[in-house]
Image 1: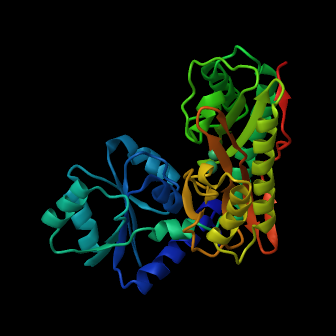
Image 2: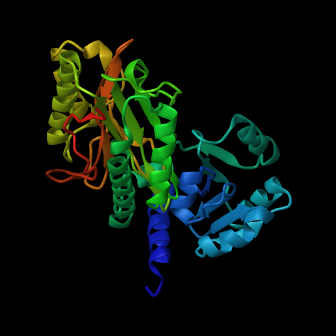
Image 3: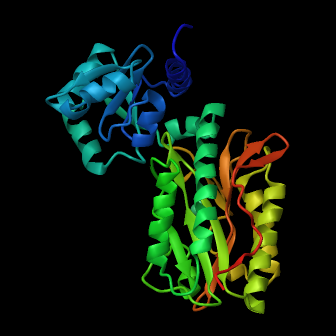
Length: 365
Ligand code: ZN
Ligand code: ZN
């Protein structure tokens, strides 16, 4: 009560984390992962350690970030360190913490070794994914950021289309797209743009090259914006000039698979159930071997979050999760087709955040 929105949000998240600490009989947890740190504290700096116990919320950082930390993380006590390990020890001692969790999936082996050697009175407990689990279900406010990032992607892509024609290189177009995304309000790209024409499109994560687009190319474009730290992610595939029969066939299979998966997406299903819907359609059309990645992933402060929509995705989907649906077919030497939407899982289905058309566009001729 009385706290500004950001403060209330922080306190809610800390309360949830503290429940988990209690469940796991931990006195405290150290948080170093940048997205986890930002999620729990609001602090966006590149270095800092959160120490969270039932009665403490401390942010340990260095001279570069002390002032920023005090502004961005008012619910935390900010401690500037000279000697990192002795400050960590001091804070843990002050709050009587002996059994302490750490992000074993993020902390380096070197870091862990130092803690164990120098802070040997502490019982270190690996807790991979502890904060990530809290991040899985997005609040209205988080979804609004992702939606805004998705809208920037849609607008930028629409403006890029008229510039796509034979002769222009992948690199030029990727640069243009980056400019458009930033111009429309992206604080950063969500990840390096994938823009790949013709045979390059057969590499699902191709890097834009100096190859000029040619008539008949399929061009795969996969990109996203960041707004308040939150990512968007979309892929569209277009044709330069007239599509041949093969191109048309591939495109329609992927589109069918994508639409069917979107129709199947809802709370209560597992990631692998939704994945199977798209995979079945592509396999039945004879291209099972050419769809070698998962159907989708969650998106938030990080571009790839759990749960996944994939053959091994056992997690049951819940309302408020934000996932991509992105089947693809990749034919070596010829090209690729991928269509990716971002969707919020709801009780009875999903709400698509990507608004760009999924019709096959033939451009530039
Ligand atoms: Zn993508
Ligand atoms: Zn994606």
